[in-house]
Length: 63
Image (tube, one colour):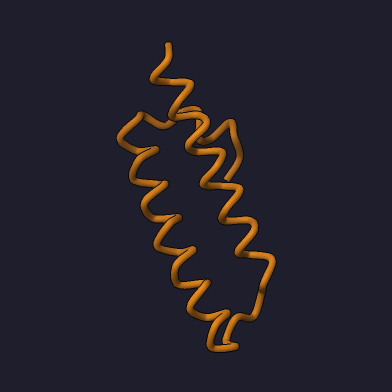
């Protein structure tokens, strides 16, 4: 998801997005541990998306 799209979200939507991404990351880690992961780059992509969402959430709270 692009930063432009995330900046349009409300704080509640950002928190929900972060929670969903954390669940996805957990599932990806389980898949990696059991050698079922088809795209290992997805783990780093999800981590970066979580960081982006947290950054935008912090910016919104400080305004």
